[in-house]
Image: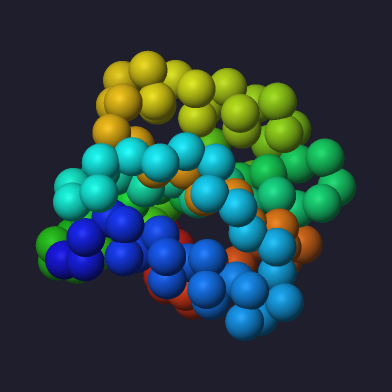
Length: 108
């Protein structure tokens, strides 16, 4: 598994290469911190992606805030709750109207 810092850097670079704005909102533990990706849909809503594993044990992402986009304030509150539980957490924000994962990874 990639170190958290490397995965975050890859997300930021891939977003920039695709012409999407991306920002590191919170720096976590370099080697093993979990990562949240906040997808700002630029319409007042957002989706927060969290790292997970699928049934076969493969790395994947899931919509932590639910199947549908939520108001930005709800997404921020979700992130705040997760950070309170895990202070090693990384948070990356990507602006993308289509809500795509910056690395094109699978979203469950």
